[in-house]
Length: 109
Image 1 (tube, helix red, strand yellow):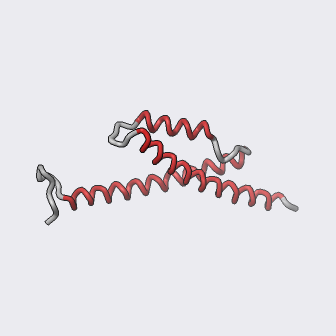
Image 2 (cartoon, helix red, strand yellow):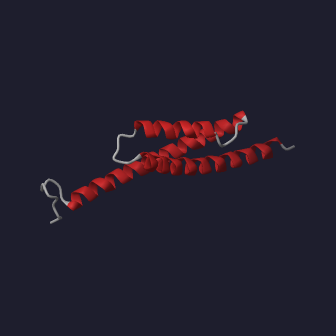
Image 3 (cartoon, helix red, strand yellow):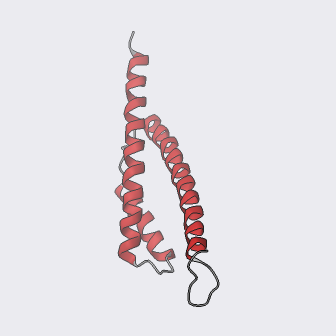
């Protein structure tokens, strides 16, 4: 039997199972976001755009801070989403480099 909280509603194990389910959903969403970033990278290669768009990053961070209702504070939200953006940008940049190399190889006689 798991430890119960003060009100006796849920046990520690219940809360941990809920966290585990949320972690699984977060992982699914992060991978979905990364897949979309790879699609964006393809568009950027085709359009000749750079991988990094500082304005877009600032917009995303500002929007997330604005939508945050807590209990995480502004700095936590900024740190978390900066990390997410950094990792998806890294993945997108790798994809862009792969596609740029492939395009270069394809146009050689």
